[in-house]
Image (cartoon, rainbow, N blue to C red; front, side, top):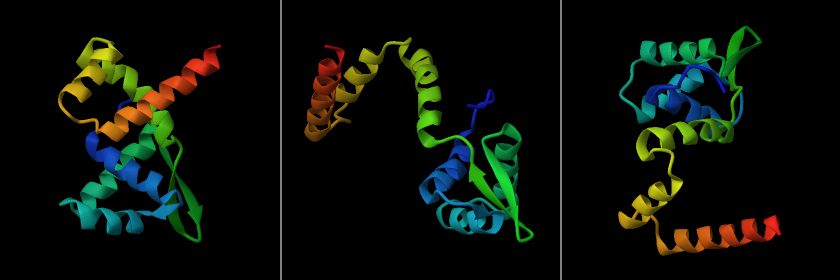
Length: 127
């Protein structure tokens, strides 16, 4: 993970690259983001260049037009961000996070069942 943080706007570019999971030209990135955001062309170019400078994407020069690929996977990003989020918002206490999600009704019954199954598998793996 890069040492510099990724802004919320930059994260939108990353989400696009993760979702597409293929090299994309700046024009293709713009085309997609112009449909879902109110950003202009120069804003998107700036975001792409910032991500490049942070080392989380890189251009591949093919056929004269740079195509950008992600160097950090979505999972790597999440793994790096979760501890920071937990520390900042929940004082490092994951139980508080889950209790908040359950208390607010953000987890469906199906989500809770999936988590229970996940914990059972993890517990069996420890034995």
